Length: 75
Image 1 (cartoon, helix red, strand yellow):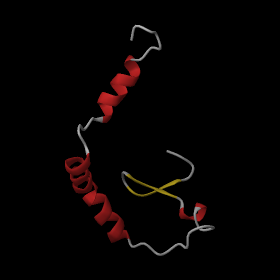
Image 2 (image 1 turned 60 degrees about the horizontal axis):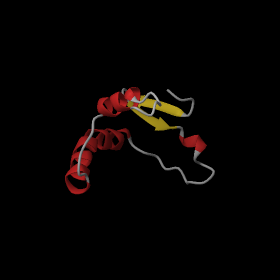
Image 3 (image 1 turned 45 degrees about the vertical axis):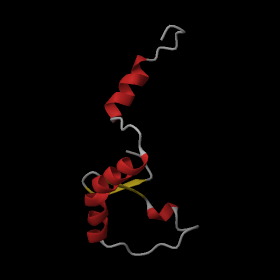
Image 4 (image 1 turned 180 degrees about the vertical axis):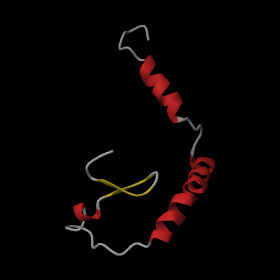
């Protein structure tokens, strides 16, 4: 985890709002709204994939591809 990240709920990482207050007026953000957004993120990703993606790759597929690249011209 980064020094600039806060954990308000398990598996929810947020940028420390104090780092943004110089440029962006900070508002009180209720916990229920954070949980609502967190619980809807998979629905949003599914919608984005259906409308804009030709192919959806998992993170493990991407990591395997990166790990397979050894920099040699034969790869």
